[in-house]
Structure formats: structure tokens, C-alpha cells
Amino acid sequence: MTQRIPASGALDALRLALSAALALALAACGGGGGLPTESSGTATAAAASASSATTSLDGTAAAYIPTVAADAVVTPRASAQATTTLMAASDAARLAQQATFGPTEALISTIATQGASAWIAAQMTAAKSVYPALGTSAVDTNTNASATWCQTQVGYDAAANSTCWRDNMSVVPVGWQFYRQALAGEDQLRQRMALALSELLVVNNRQIEGTYAFRDYQQMFRDYAFGNYRDLLREVALSPVMGQFLNSVNNDKSDPNENFAREFLQLFTIGTCQLNHDGSLTGGTCQPNYDNAMVRNYAYALTGWTYPAGGANGWCKPLCNGWQNPRFLRGRMVAVDGHQDTTARTLLNGVQLPASRTAAQSLELVLDSVMNHKNMAPFIARRLIQAFVTSNPSPGYLAAVATAFESGSYAGFGSGTRGDLAATLAAVLLSTEARLDGYVWGDGYGRLREPVQLYTAVLRATEASTDAIWFNWTFGDGLGQDPFNAPSVFNFYAPDNALPGTSYVSPAFGIENASTTLSRIQFLWILNNPWITSGLRLDPSSGVSGSWGTYITMSKWLPLVTDPATLVDRFNLLTTSNQLTPTQRQAVIDAVSAWNSTNDPTNWQAHRVRTAAYLTFLSPQFSIVR
Image (cartoon, rainbow, N blue to C red; front, side, top):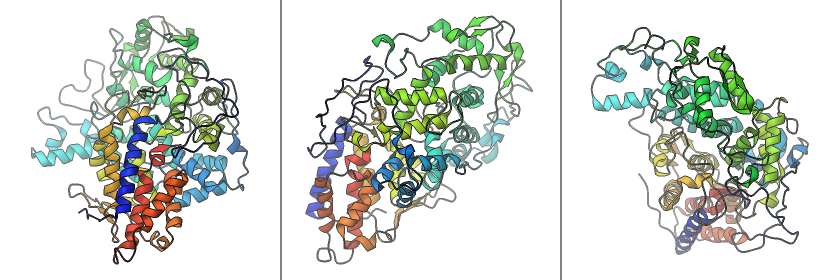
């Protein structure tokens, strides 16, 4: 139950002021750098003069933002640090905001001690988080043609069937485990990379059912997070989950479905328009990479694959249509070469499909054609930069990351093979535009913290324990993002989502509006307002076996309440990487100080902690990661 906590006049006024500031920031700042994107057709930004300055939120002049030329190789300043060199706490917290699910005080200390490059290297070799077994593959061995699998297990009771479907057919249990491991897992960078890849290579529960299959599909991104993009693409192309989702399974040479082929080119590899190495449009306008005839060639190239063995149903035994295995969503799809197209065809980059070929050979030629395409490196570079650092990277930043993808090497990271994701991610996080604090207050620099990362950052900063039930249901629905269940293959939002009235794109603003902005504020108020001494936040769910609710304890913060400035500074570091302006910081200190033993003899200490947490989380600098 939520307990209503009375607020002082100072807190009321500040809460309203910061709520308005947050709404304004979310509506107007864009969360991206002030440089043109591929859709703008501008190859490079105009050079700024050395006297140029930007303006921070409180109206004061910010640091000069250096312009990076489109062909510059951005120096990985942080990678040059020795492992014994201390980073500033604010710099360490900023890397944690970019590369993890949210800073903790222990994590900030670790990064500050190791340095950025050494910490990233340690993360890439950290023990991998693994999803537990979820659901059962038995859902795909139901031979009862007159009843669903759940009906065979629990009968026709509606409530029991609903729970059975949730636990065995839906992606919901995977979302619960995702949150639990995102909060507690030591392999934060791997899990963040897996989330970014899952939002690039999308499947959803609207078209696929099978909890065990969603578990395997999402684990795949953890397994390949620092591997090679070619290998990951192969696994995606052979995944029966993707096969069913985009209709590539059971595609016959006679008349193949084009769905997977089209999205493979448009969304997974090269995009629709020709790009320069720095991500700008070739010739300044959109020149198509392919036409529908080429999509058709790819569809033919990918024919002849059916489900893995292991499935059974009541309609076709043992095969469907003479060659197709019944649905089974574990493992790789299997080739039936007699149903692979055998007409000689031409793919992109002049890759030739010979008339005599197997389905496996055809797939490798498909991968050759896109991995060596000039668009691939800048296309993937932009997506990863947007996921970790800023929505609108400069041409030089994007080109440096694209070079790392092509060479497979960056600042000691990578195997030297084209498509190496470890090298690419190292370039994303170690390039000057990611690490140099002079960029922080640049025009629109940064990205909007998407809802999933909003929840995890709050819970990690406050060292919460949660079963994640509320975050997959009530809060996930309220902010338009329940994990791994985007409305379409285009994800929750488009990477080129334009921010009205600006020249920027801002992907996560695609699901941000007046309603979700208020929902963000409401979530923070719910989480912090009833922060009573017992620490119980959200009750366990009676409908989920083993649910324990969400808890936050106050014990570590209570000793600081006699020094409001220190208390606020601790939260400022965790929530904004020390980016509150002096004016904002003092206002929060004043609001915290307003609680005392005179106006609330019983709970003034708890009120001080709640106020410091709530107002720093509410700040625009928390919602916009810079």
C-alpha cells in the first residue's frame, strides 16, 4: 500500500518546477548531438569557431565543443590510461550510465580505479549471465488436434489457462529474468550489448508463442555480444524463431516469401540508402541500395530451410507438405536442399549465386554480399552509437566506429576480422566523443534513457531487490516498453525518428509523449514517496509463484541526513554523473534541508533521503544520458 507523505512548501514548489523542467527537456532537447543525420543529406557539419560556446540548462556558458572532421580518426583518450590511473568519479559514473544498466557506488569505484579501457576489457571477459530454463519445449509436441497444449495440461479453466500461457507461451518470464540479471549481473556490458542487438534483430510475442524459444533467442545475443556480426547474422537467419516471425521457414523455391529478405537488407544489415563511410548520404540524397528484384533474389537465395527436428502436432505426421518438419523452435533450422532455388542469380556487391548450390552455400554467399557492402560498417556503427552514447554522432565519430568494424580492431580490442563486435563496441565507448567531457553540454548531445534503462538505473542506484513483476506489466505498459516484445520488427522506435522542430533524430523519443512523460514522473513519485523505514516498496504478486516484490532499504543513506549537501552529492553522482547545475544542486539541498525534527519529529530523516533521491531522479539530466 502506498503511504501519502506530506511535503513541505519548499518541496512542493521544487517538485513542480523540476517536473515542468523534465517535461520541457523531454519535449524539446532531443537527446542527440547537434549534427546532421543520414536523412538530412548533409555530409559534414560546419566548423565551429574556437570562441563558440553552448548554453547549459541554467543559462550559463558551457565548455567549447570541438568539431571533428568527417575523415578524422577519433583518438581513444581513455584507452591510453594505465590500469592504475584513477578516473574522476564523474567520468566513471558517466561511462557506467552509457555502458551498464545504471551506476552503483561500487561500480563507479571499480571503473575509476581500473580506467575505462581496462574496465571494458574486464567486462568482455567476465563470466556470462545465462537465462535459466524457462517454459517447456513440450508446447511444440502437442498431438491433440482438438485442444491447445495448455488445455491438455490444466483443462479449460480460464484463469489456469491464462497462467499456463504466460509461463509457457509468452515472453513475460524472459522479461522478469532480464530485469533480475540486469540489476545484479556482473557482466553489465555484455547484457547491455545483448539488449542493443535484440532491438536491432527484433522478434516479438505478437507473432510468436513459446517461452522456451524466446529464452534461447535472447540468450543468443549474450553468447555473440562480443563475437563477429557475421556469425550472429548466420544464427539469426537460421533461428526458427526468426524463421517463423519473418516467414523464412518452409520457404520453397517455387514462390518464396520476401519478408525476411526485405528486413534482412533494410533493418539488419545495410539499410535502404547508400551511405558514405561517415554515415552521410552518398551524393546528398537517398540513392537506393537495391530494388524489389534484388529483394526477390535474396528471398530465393534463402529457400529450402525448415524447422529443427523435435516437433509434433496432430495435423501432419511426421512431415508437413511432404518436406517440412512440424514447428519446433530450439536449435537451427535444417536444410532441405531439394527445395533450395537452383537458378543462377546475382546478389549485391556482384556476388553470384551459381545454379548448382546447397542451401548452406547460398546462405554463406548471402552473408558475403552484405558483410562486404560499403554500407554495413556505418549502418551498424550508427545503431550502436545511438544505443550507448548519443543519438546524432558526428561524422568523425561514426567514421571511427565504422573503421573499427571494418578492421576488426580498435585500441587493442578485437580479432582483426571484419565485423568484430568487441572492436566496434570499444570504439563506441572509447572514442573522444564518448569520453571527452567537453561534449556533454553540446547542442542536444546524448540520448533519452529508454524506459527499460530508466527502471534499471533507479533500482541499481538505490540497491533495490526486485522480482521485476511490476516492471514487466504495469510500468512496462505505462511507458510503452515491455522487454523483447516490440510492436513490430521495426522495434519500439525507429533509429531515424525525427524530433519535431529540430534537425535532430532521437530514437527513444518515438515512444515519448505527454502521457509517457507524466508516467515517468509518476513512477518516480510512486517509488520514492512511500519510501518508509521498513523498505517495502511494491508487494509480491499473488499470481506469480515465488514473487517477492520490490524492496529498497534506507540504511546506507540515513547516516548522511545530517549533511544534506553530502547526501545530495551522492545521489547527484549516481543519477546524473554530477551534471546537476549549481542552481539545481542548491535547490535540491534546500528542499532536503526543509525536513527537520521540528516539522516532522518522527520521519524527518527518511523524508530527507526520499527528497534527495526523488528530485535528482526527476532532473532532466537523469532522463537524458550525456
